Length: 243
Image (cartoon, rainbow, N blue to C red; front, side, top):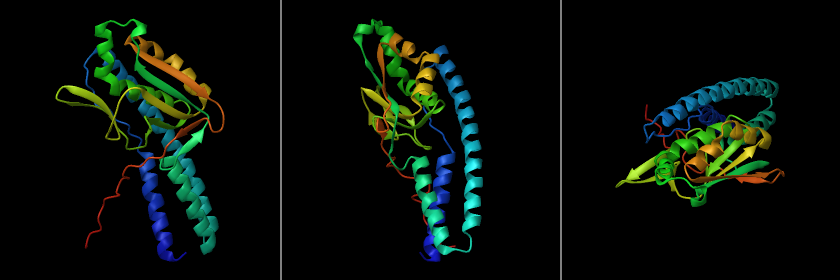
Protein backbone atom coordinates (compact mmCIF):
# COMPACT_ATOMS: atom_id res chain seq x y z
CA UNK A 1 0.00 0.00 0.00
CA UNK A 2 1.52 3.40 -1.01
CA UNK A 3 1.62 6.55 1.11
CA UNK A 4 -1.44 8.02 -0.65
CA UNK A 5 -3.55 4.97 0.28
CA UNK A 6 -2.46 5.28 3.88
CA UNK A 7 -3.47 8.94 3.89
CA UNK A 8 -6.92 8.07 2.47
CA UNK A 9 -7.29 5.33 5.10
CA UNK A 10 -6.40 7.72 7.92
CA UNK A 11 -8.76 10.34 6.49
CA UNK A 12 -11.67 7.88 6.43
CA UNK A 13 -10.90 6.80 9.99
CA UNK A 14 -10.86 10.39 11.22
CA UNK A 15 -14.13 11.22 9.42
CA UNK A 16 -15.93 8.17 10.78
CA UNK A 17 -14.66 8.83 14.33
CA UNK A 18 -16.15 12.30 14.18
CA UNK A 19 -19.35 10.74 12.87
CA UNK A 20 -19.44 8.37 15.86
CA UNK A 21 -18.76 10.85 18.70
CA UNK A 22 -21.63 13.31 18.25
CA UNK A 23 -24.61 11.19 19.30
CA UNK A 24 -27.61 13.34 18.58
CA UNK A 25 -30.84 11.48 17.92
CA UNK A 26 -33.35 14.26 17.57
CA UNK A 27 -37.11 14.52 17.54
CA UNK A 28 -39.45 17.41 16.98
CA UNK A 29 -42.06 18.06 19.71
CA UNK A 30 -45.58 17.94 18.35
CA UNK A 31 -47.75 17.93 21.47
CA UNK A 32 -47.58 20.42 24.31
CA UNK A 33 -48.54 18.85 27.64
CA UNK A 34 -47.15 18.19 31.11
CA UNK A 35 -46.40 14.64 30.10
CA UNK A 36 -44.49 15.82 27.04
CA UNK A 37 -42.42 18.24 29.15
CA UNK A 38 -41.55 15.39 31.49
CA UNK A 39 -40.43 13.26 28.56
CA UNK A 40 -38.33 16.10 27.12
CA UNK A 41 -36.58 16.78 30.44
CA UNK A 42 -35.83 13.13 31.10
CA UNK A 43 -34.60 12.73 27.53
CA UNK A 44 -32.16 15.63 27.94
CA UNK A 45 -30.74 14.20 31.17
CA UNK A 46 -30.31 10.76 29.61
CA UNK A 47 -28.69 12.21 26.49
CA UNK A 48 -26.17 14.18 28.59
CA UNK A 49 -25.27 11.12 30.66
CA UNK A 50 -24.93 9.03 27.53
CA UNK A 51 -22.75 11.64 25.81
CA UNK A 52 -20.46 11.79 28.86
CA UNK A 53 -20.09 8.02 28.87
CA UNK A 54 -19.36 7.92 25.14
CA UNK A 55 -16.70 10.62 25.43
CA UNK A 56 -14.96 8.73 28.25
CA UNK A 57 -14.96 5.60 26.12
CA UNK A 58 -13.63 7.55 23.17
CA UNK A 59 -10.71 8.95 25.18
CA UNK A 60 -9.77 5.42 26.23
CA UNK A 61 -9.96 4.13 22.66
CA UNK A 62 -7.92 7.06 21.32
CA UNK A 63 -5.17 6.37 23.86
CA UNK A 64 -5.07 2.70 22.85
CA UNK A 65 -5.02 3.65 19.17
CA UNK A 66 -2.16 6.09 19.74
CA UNK A 67 -0.16 3.32 21.39
CA UNK A 68 -0.73 1.08 18.36
CA UNK A 69 0.39 3.81 15.96
CA UNK A 70 3.59 4.39 17.96
CA UNK A 71 4.33 0.66 18.01
CA UNK A 72 3.79 0.41 14.23
CA UNK A 73 5.82 3.49 13.29
CA UNK A 74 8.68 2.68 10.97
CA UNK A 75 6.98 -0.35 9.44
CA UNK A 76 4.72 0.21 6.43
CA UNK A 77 3.10 -3.23 6.65
CA UNK A 78 2.45 -2.85 10.38
CA UNK A 79 0.91 0.59 9.86
CA UNK A 80 -1.30 -0.78 7.11
CA UNK A 81 -2.55 -3.56 9.39
CA UNK A 82 -3.32 -1.04 12.14
CA UNK A 83 -5.25 1.23 9.73
CA UNK A 84 -7.29 -1.64 8.31
CA UNK A 85 -8.15 -2.82 11.82
CA UNK A 86 -9.14 0.72 12.82
CA UNK A 87 -11.26 1.17 9.69
CA UNK A 88 -13.39 -1.90 10.41
CA UNK A 89 -13.66 -1.06 14.11
CA UNK A 90 -14.82 2.46 13.34
CA UNK A 91 -17.32 1.19 10.76
CA UNK A 92 -18.81 -1.17 13.33
CA UNK A 93 -19.03 1.44 16.07
CA UNK A 94 -20.40 4.09 13.72
CA UNK A 95 -23.19 1.74 12.60
CA UNK A 96 -22.06 1.34 9.00
CA UNK A 97 -21.78 -2.45 9.33
CA UNK A 98 -24.60 -4.78 10.45
CA UNK A 99 -24.56 -5.92 14.07
CA UNK A 100 -25.67 -9.37 15.23
CA UNK A 101 -25.89 -10.76 18.74
CA UNK A 102 -28.11 -11.35 21.76
CA UNK A 103 -30.83 -8.75 22.05
CA UNK A 104 -34.51 -7.90 22.14
CA UNK A 105 -37.27 -6.72 19.85
CA UNK A 106 -40.10 -4.39 20.80
CA UNK A 107 -43.29 -4.34 18.74
CA UNK A 108 -45.57 -1.31 19.09
CA UNK A 109 -49.02 -1.30 17.49
CA UNK A 110 -52.61 -0.27 18.32
CA UNK A 111 -54.69 -2.77 20.28
CA UNK A 112 -58.38 -2.05 20.90
CA UNK A 113 -58.48 -4.81 23.52
CA UNK A 114 -56.45 -2.62 25.90
CA UNK A 115 -59.59 -0.55 26.49
CA UNK A 116 -58.19 2.97 26.02
CA UNK A 117 -60.69 5.74 25.38
CA UNK A 118 -60.75 7.58 22.05
CA UNK A 119 -59.03 10.55 23.70
CA UNK A 120 -56.29 8.32 25.15
CA UNK A 121 -55.81 6.56 21.82
CA UNK A 122 -55.31 9.93 20.12
CA UNK A 123 -52.33 10.78 22.34
CA UNK A 124 -49.77 8.39 20.86
CA UNK A 125 -50.15 9.41 17.19
CA UNK A 126 -49.59 13.02 18.25
CA UNK A 127 -46.42 12.15 20.22
CA UNK A 128 -45.17 9.03 18.47
CA UNK A 129 -41.74 10.46 17.65
CA UNK A 130 -41.12 11.46 21.27
CA UNK A 131 -42.22 8.11 22.66
CA UNK A 132 -40.07 6.18 20.19
CA UNK A 133 -37.19 8.49 21.07
CA UNK A 134 -37.76 7.78 24.75
CA UNK A 135 -37.57 4.01 24.18
CA UNK A 136 -34.38 4.39 22.13
CA UNK A 137 -32.74 6.57 24.79
CA UNK A 138 -33.54 4.06 27.53
CA UNK A 139 -32.11 1.20 25.46
CA UNK A 140 -28.94 3.04 24.43
CA UNK A 141 -28.38 4.12 28.02
CA UNK A 142 -28.76 0.58 29.36
CA UNK A 143 -26.79 -1.94 27.38
CA UNK A 144 -27.83 -1.54 23.73
CA UNK A 145 -24.97 -1.37 21.25
CA UNK A 146 -27.03 -1.21 18.05
CA UNK A 147 -30.66 -0.22 17.43
CA UNK A 148 -32.96 0.02 14.43
CA UNK A 149 -36.60 1.03 13.96
CA UNK A 150 -38.33 -0.81 11.11
CA UNK A 151 -34.83 -1.74 9.89
CA UNK A 152 -33.62 1.88 9.82
CA UNK A 153 -30.31 1.86 11.73
CA UNK A 154 -29.94 4.61 14.30
CA UNK A 155 -26.55 6.32 14.18
CA UNK A 156 -25.03 9.57 15.37
CA UNK A 157 -26.89 11.72 12.86
CA UNK A 158 -30.21 9.87 12.91
CA UNK A 159 -33.52 11.62 13.47
CA UNK A 160 -36.92 10.43 14.64
CA UNK A 161 -39.51 13.00 13.58
CA UNK A 162 -43.23 13.34 13.29
CA UNK A 163 -43.94 14.87 9.88
CA UNK A 164 -47.40 16.25 9.05
CA UNK A 165 -48.63 16.80 5.51
CA UNK A 166 -52.17 18.12 4.99
CA UNK A 167 -52.91 17.40 8.66
CA UNK A 168 -51.88 13.77 8.20
CA UNK A 169 -48.93 12.88 10.42
CA UNK A 170 -46.44 10.07 10.19
CA UNK A 171 -43.13 9.08 11.78
CA UNK A 172 -39.97 9.46 9.74
CA UNK A 173 -36.70 7.76 10.71
CA UNK A 174 -33.56 8.94 8.92
CA UNK A 175 -35.91 10.80 6.58
CA UNK A 176 -37.82 7.63 5.62
CA UNK A 177 -41.53 7.28 6.50
CA UNK A 178 -42.42 4.25 8.62
CA UNK A 179 -45.78 2.79 9.63
CA UNK A 180 -47.30 0.31 12.06
CA UNK A 181 -46.20 -1.94 13.48
CA UNK A 182 -43.15 -0.11 14.81
CA UNK A 183 -40.50 -2.78 15.41
CA UNK A 184 -37.47 -1.78 17.43
CA UNK A 185 -34.50 -4.16 17.30
CA UNK A 186 -31.72 -3.80 19.86
CA UNK A 187 -28.49 -5.79 20.15
CA UNK A 188 -26.94 -5.71 23.61
CA UNK A 189 -27.27 -6.78 27.23
CA UNK A 190 -30.78 -8.24 27.46
CA UNK A 191 -31.05 -8.11 31.25
CA UNK A 192 -29.98 -4.45 31.48
CA UNK A 193 -32.30 -3.35 28.69
CA UNK A 194 -35.34 -5.17 30.08
CA UNK A 195 -34.76 -3.94 33.62
CA UNK A 196 -34.51 -0.36 32.37
CA UNK A 197 -37.75 -0.68 30.40
CA UNK A 198 -39.49 -2.00 33.52
CA UNK A 199 -38.09 0.74 35.77
CA UNK A 200 -39.30 3.41 33.34
CA UNK A 201 -42.73 1.69 33.19
CA UNK A 202 -42.78 2.22 29.44
CA UNK A 203 -45.12 -0.68 28.76
CA UNK A 204 -47.68 0.90 31.09
CA UNK A 205 -47.47 4.26 29.35
CA UNK A 206 -47.93 2.72 25.91
CA UNK A 207 -50.83 0.51 27.00
CA UNK A 208 -52.54 3.53 28.58
CA UNK A 209 -52.57 5.02 25.08
CA UNK A 210 -53.99 1.84 23.54
CA UNK A 211 -50.66 0.61 22.16
CA UNK A 212 -49.27 -2.89 22.48
CA UNK A 213 -45.70 -2.93 23.79
CA UNK A 214 -44.48 -6.48 23.15
CA UNK A 215 -40.91 -7.29 24.23
CA UNK A 216 -39.25 -10.52 23.09
CA UNK A 217 -35.84 -11.87 24.08
CA UNK A 218 -33.34 -13.49 21.71
CA UNK A 219 -30.39 -14.69 23.84
CA UNK A 220 -28.39 -16.62 21.21
CA UNK A 221 -25.30 -15.21 19.50
CA UNK A 222 -27.33 -14.83 16.30
CA UNK A 223 -30.48 -13.70 18.10
CA UNK A 224 -31.00 -10.21 16.63
CA UNK A 225 -29.53 -8.59 13.53
CA UNK A 226 -29.58 -4.81 13.19
CA UNK A 227 -28.79 -3.71 9.61
CA UNK A 228 -26.02 -1.30 8.80
CA UNK A 229 -26.66 2.38 8.11
CA UNK A 230 -27.02 3.13 4.40
CA UNK A 231 -27.53 6.90 4.39
CA UNK A 232 -24.99 9.64 3.66
CA UNK A 233 -22.12 10.20 6.07
CA UNK A 234 -21.09 13.65 7.33
CA UNK A 235 -18.90 15.34 4.74
CA UNK A 236 -19.73 12.77 2.07
CA UNK A 237 -20.89 15.48 -0.32
CA UNK A 238 -18.13 17.95 0.52
CA UNK A 239 -16.26 19.19 -2.54
CA UNK A 240 -12.60 20.00 -2.78
CA UNK A 241 -11.88 23.68 -3.27
CA UNK A 242 -9.45 25.20 -5.69
CA UNK A 243 -7.61 27.04 -2.96
